[in-house]
Amino acid sequence: MKTVINTNNAPAPIGPYSQAIRAGNFLFASGQIAINPANGELVLDDIKTETKQVMENINAILTEAGIDFSHIVKTSIFLKDMQNFALVNEVYGTYFSDNFPARETVQVAALPKNVNVEITVTAFKP
Image (cartoon, rainbow, N blue to C red):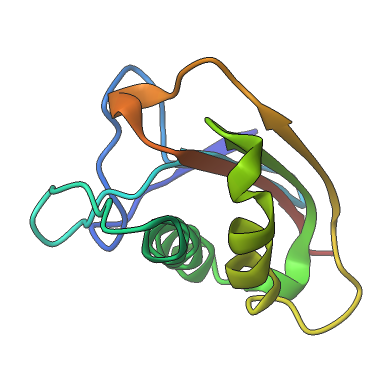
């Protein structure tokens, strides 16, 4: 059985997908970009601000699902430019205290709405 997770505190999907799906003890969150859910505008001031908005969107989805960053077991980070890796990593790291999730970070040719970073997560809660 799967359950759709949806919150107004994260951006509405821009296509035929859900913000997240709970399947058993797992939560699979769709990739998040830096859209401010309050006004629907992209937050592209700088890469750190953009990454913070992405992480806050993930936080909103986790909260709606009744979990937090400590439940994340896997993340995927997609960057338009690998030169931004250190700055993205700096912001990303502030959302975890220990027992960091598995992760890959890859550079891609393009991302939705021409953003610089997209992050997706998988979480587990026994």
